[in-house]
Image (cartoon, rainbow, N blue to C red; front, side, top):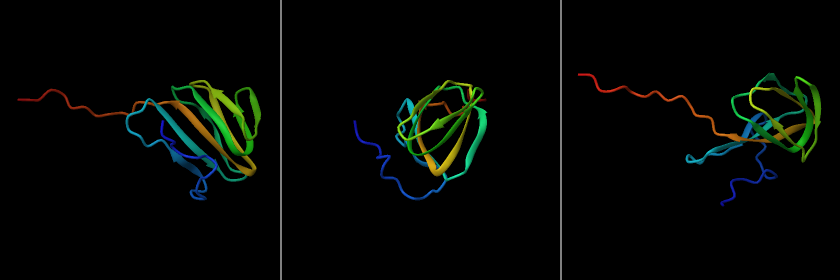
Length: 116
């Protein structure tokens, strides 16, 4: 398998958001490297229709769920079941984490049968 990226060698920009994503068109998985600067957060929300695995690559912070908060440190791996509440808060060193989940089907407009 080809190496897609190295999570230890990522660009400084963007400062927030997806730093890397799988670009290969023919795949069954999606993966993103998400960056949150120090003190920033992603508000708690209900996740999509896919289970999501996260791996903390750099920094730390907190994972916010219905059950409360879990501390996040480099190397931590968590499973976020589909349709569960999750949010993230970056600590003083920021938070970079990798997500992996089944690829969601995008909405596609399909034409109907030809009209006469």
